[in-house]
Structures are given as structure tokens and as C-alpha cells.
Amino acid sequence: MSLWIGRLTEGDPAAAEKIWQRYYERLVRFARHELAGANRRASDEEDLAQSVFGSFFQAASAGRFPKLNDRDALWRLLLVITSRKAASRARRDLALKRAGEVGESALVQAGMNGVGGGIEQVLGTTPTPEFAALAEEQCQRLLEVLGDDMLRRIAELRLEGYTVDEISDRLGRAPGTIHRKLARIREIWQEHAEA
Image (cartoon, helix red, strand yellow):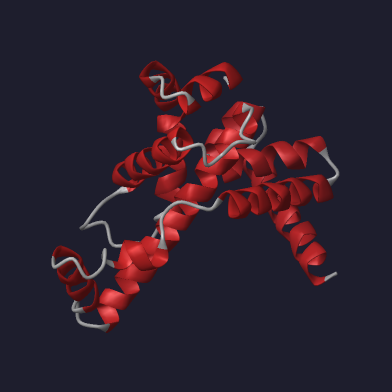
């Protein structure tokens, strides 16, 4: 995969296609989880995943991720971009609800008149390399704090958007066991946050 990442930064469309094929379905599952409870009128998890890939491919082609060198770092970066875009969308939806759907339309209109670029211009959609690096470091710290390979694997799968049943099937454990392990992961992370 690191070969495809390198080729992507050189502008190779075959590399983009290969990365898309490998990660698209997983990213859609993660996006579905991130959009839980969100208004799906305007777009859905597939729209979000496509937007993530568009932002990622554009930024990677521009050389914005020079330290991106393996598939784990790539996956974490895609998760960060997805989370930020989902959060941005949630903020936008809330602002629209509060403003009676005037806020975004006014910003979009201003963008059409050459004044600005809409709410996306204000909030941004692609993480800066610094933010991506910080998110990756934090993710690694949280996984290390778990201290148990099984807990780490369950946490990674959950972060990737897998459901409890899917994790259960993958690891050959009962769903109840997965629920208990997830509760333990939350406890450990809460203790770590309070320390």
C-alpha cells in the first residue's frame, strides 16, 4: 500500500483508484456511524465518503501529507477527515436549524457573489498536516494505554466503523463479550482522561 501512497502523491490516477477500492466500503461504514442521528436529507454516508476521498486526493496530490507512508497512517488520516467532515456537517445542520435555514444560504449566496466560499470556507474540510499528526499520535496513545492486544484490536475495529456483531464475527467472540470489552475500553480511556 505504501507504493500506492507514493504514486498518489505523484498524481498517478491508478493509485487513487486502488486506494478507493481498498478503503471505500470501510469508510462508508465508518461514515454511517459518524452520521448516526444526523439529518440525511441533504447527503448520506456515501456522499460523506466521496467528499473525504476528494479532499484527501486533492491534498495528497498537493503534497500536504509528506509523512504518510503506510496503510495504518492512511486509514487513521481518512478517519480523521471523515470525523471532521461529519462534525462540520452536524454544526452546519445545527446552525441551519437555529437560523431558520438562513445562515448557510446566506453564506452560499455570498460565495456566489465572490464575497466568500460558504460555510465550508469558514470551517474547513481537510485537516491540516499538524492536526492529522496530532490525531494519529493521540489515537496511538489511547490504543497503547489499553495494554491488551484483544482490547486494542476491538478498539481499532470499532474506530473503523465495525458494528459489535461484525467485530464478534471477525474475532470469533460472543457479542456480549464484545460489549463488555468495549465497556472496559471506555473505562480505561475515561481513567486515562481523568489522570
